[in-house]
Amino acid sequence: MDDFDELVSSLTPREDNEAIASYQNTTAVACPACEDPFDDMVVCKQEFTSLNLDFEMDLCTAIHDDSVVLFTHK
Image (cartoon, rainbow, N blue to C red):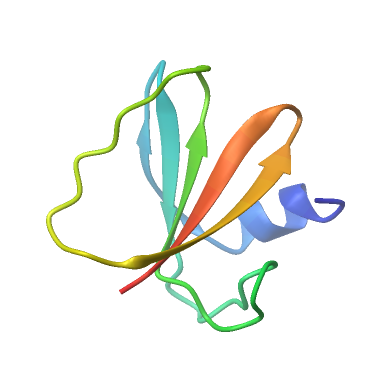
């Protein structure tokens, strides 16, 4: 993703730890994968990362600097 830094600057940070960084899309930015607005962006910092999801949702994926980036659609 060429515009990753610009994308992050448009989102609200929610969590940042050794495994993930998560951001909330509070301004209806379009998903880089499907072009629909997404709810949250999760950057997986480790090779193996588990996510505990409270409910079923659609996910789009991308890669940035060898990290998996997930875009959630509730």
